Length: 496
Image 1 (spheres, rainbow, N blue to C red):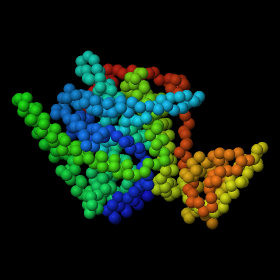
Image 2 (cartoon, one colour; image 1 turned 60 degrees about the vertical axis):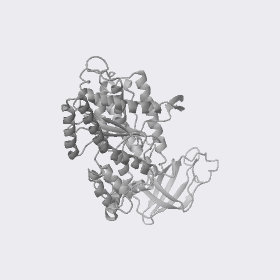
Image 3 (spheres, rainbow, N blue to C red; image 1 turned 180 degrees about the horizontal axis):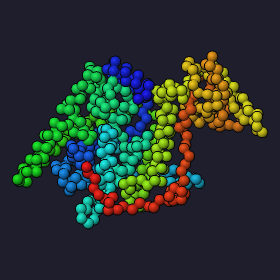
Image 4 (cartoon, rainbow, N blue to C red; image 1 turned 120 degrees about the vertical axis):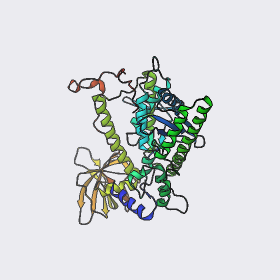
């Protein structure tokens, strides 16, 4: 937990109301997200029990498994879930746009939308990862064959859960994690994992503080936990109903028990379903950060690429990455994390304040400027404007550090000198001016006097050293990895 988050948490504890941790929204929220509230059988890691899913808050679809220990019933549930999610994915592929990319530049196509799956908690994402592993390698022919939609569901869930590990991706989001990135409550991180109590702090009913509303929301009878765990008291009730369903001596008795199971499961899921859409409304009320659209464009590009791969190849992801794939994935994760943290800081002054506390940024007022300064040390004069900033706090950066300003992110700058006594920083703008030294600069290119600015060592355009393509892997690292081929061992079912 960062310093400012700790302070905000303490303040929320004192006031009884959640504190904002950001001024903008850092995740994309789709116009029609696919909301999924899953439940699993108690005592099992991955046995599906029920789910409430859909894109319409007024018309949720309930899926249930009356006997989760039954293999056929589990995969019938997966086929029903696939019918909903795959339909949504195909709808996202219906409209496309063209763009240019690559070297040399070439025209490409991508979907104008990507599927966005919203689940209540990070535990729900972990559950979907296991469900994906249990379904993507299933055989559609021979003994124990499943519906073809089941492995297709597993492939897409694997893709989504993999994407969820990358900061900035909005393909699969946990509502609790997204909300706690934007608000601080007066409760512990473990308590924030309860969506009901978290939303009670952020948006309490009229006349109540967040703390008071959270105490009510923690009652499992009023707000049943879902996504994917269930309440132990409900588990006993469900066990009795399933026992009655299994022991039913007639079709009518079995149907009656099934209806009662569905009714009880709907009662467990519906409150969380409503909380999910309440959370979506709160997120939509925040203005989107400047880089959110760019990150969503990347999500759409990756979605289109994977959809095309399934059309052309169709092989599922391997159960484990090979060494080269793992190294490339780690490099992408590191790059995505660094870029996302920098973009958040550039978009949000509250996030940038964290870096000022750690000494990676500073703010000040422009007190001097030399917009026409030229560097004549080389063959050709180069325009190198300078500005002097007066800061309130000591600057912990050093002379020669490369910095950028969120107000003018395309410009590069370097710290030329520091005057600790007068708290003055001389900064030289070294790039991104857009003009040669003979042409006058447009107004506003160089900061004006009395302008408030922040400079940071963060660079949202920073890129890590690229790794060679898989086919160029040197022999010292095992050479190019062999293409993955599913095996009988891979197809072993993992439900527990």
